[in-house]
View 1 (cartoon, rainbow, N blue to C red):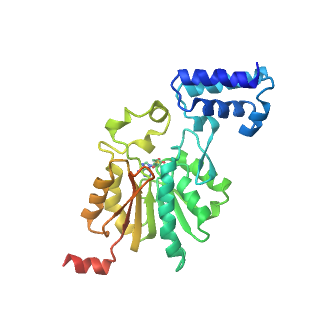
View 2 (cartoon, protein in one colour):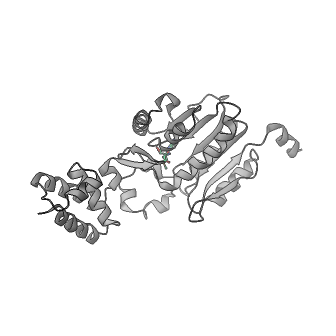
View 3 (cartoon, rainbow, N blue to C red):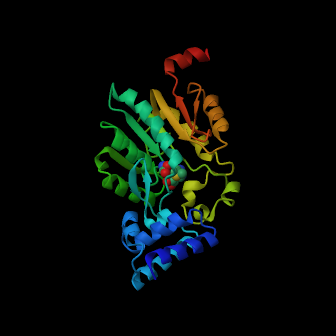
Length: 296
Ligand SMILES: C[S@@+](CC[C@H](N)C(=O)[O-])C[C@H]1O[C@@H](n2cnc3c(N)ncnc32)[C@H](O)[C@@H]1O
């Protein structure tokens, strides 16, 4: 059988089993089975596929058809133009989270003209956000935490591969609990678990059966993490420090209200993604002096 025939057959099989982008999935899995790049695969399309390569390919196709995410099978995902290792220990970084990186950078550029910014990322997962910031900002003090020790192993590996290990301190623990009261940051950011208990059952099997539940489950209404964070974050932020949070597609209103109700921040800004959905909430801590005046 030629490589092209094997690819066409697999593409049809994937499509018949409801896999989106079946041709792309087929090409990437076939390239992996033949230890080739995608370009290398095109060059070999009219040559014969070896029996060993075919066996490997069929195995990978079966894994994909059973619902395993392509990124876990291939073992990597690109984020902010960085090739990150991913496996079932970590949430697969999503393109929309790059908005959180963009907004962080707009804040950090201003701060870094005056001093070395200190940043805390809560729930770092694969380390996607922290590694991206470390790559972009020359002088930065970054702490990245996660409740999952397994995720931290992957995040450390990604930081090492990206050459930024010396810029990020990884810490295990629940939200802000591992940090000394009195320790403050210029920016705290997070893409927390925000799927409600009810919604989890309705997620695609790739997500609900394969990605870590701890990375998805935001409690009964999906807002548990934000509530906890709101009670802790203000005291860990410097005067005029920033809070940046990714939110689910219908959560911007509730999270903004939560932030306003606490009285520690100026009116939060809602930043929309390319599809017009408010994805990131950006809030600056009120200067404590001003805040006291306003409260009189
Ligand atoms: C949606 S994932 C985001 C991962 C990564 N930051 C990204 O954007 O791709 C949420 C992360 O929060 C972590 N997490 C869940 N509960 C936590 C908690 N209470 N304290 C710290 N991290 C937590 C999960 O292990 C997971 O890595």
